[in-house]
Length: 306
Image 1 (cartoon, rainbow, N blue to C red):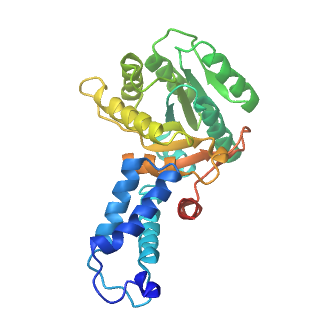
Image 2: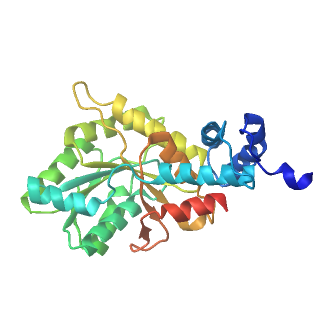
Image 3: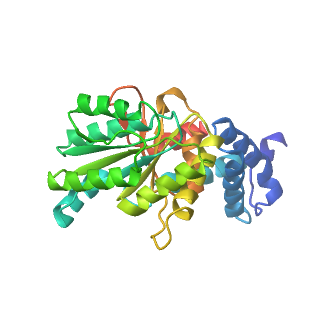
């Protein structure tokens, strides 16, 4: 009988039939760094989609579950909106005669300024003129760090030193960049812990005053559940702490750093997309300006399920 135990047969699948295969898959996803509650929700959703179906005689339950999870993860990780910032930047410049503006935010020490510099290099390689704005006026050394990147990239840097109003520094940078016909302005902001309300309020004000085209959250691929907590708190703070009468904004793209150091433990990507519905725009895969990649959804799903 053991040969037939794994076969679904012709009867309708029940929750009990699916439970062992789903539990095994949930454990695998958690092992790949997917947040526990999100792995559970994904498996519940897959289970619900399979309950009551009549599979073919020689389809094993585990194979059906894996196939359904492959489809679910592929749908989740396939961006719902365009992540082609190059095309968007060109379109804004052509039609609105102004630079395309991206704000970079995230907690301390995740590689935010380096990611900004990599995006600068990527856009420069496509022929765009990119200006940088040093709006981390809080952390000692932040302006100097961005100045070093600007010098290496031969990009114009707009800075006003420390203890200045970050929203005003950004405003000046965007206005000046527009006058000099720049295509893109990339705005660096203070790395802040997600529970630091004064700094989060400052970020919300910067976004409200300057209406950037995109808001990118930079997080580490290594940190799993922590990254989801950081991202969801940033996302809600940007919206909830915005000045009265301003249009609420949310994070609308994610950059994952240190993606080259995690082998197949790619679950943070799944958790962050699941938690916000926003896409992974780029992943950082090394130390040089060239080490920036777009996500290969199929490869990501294969890594999760292998």
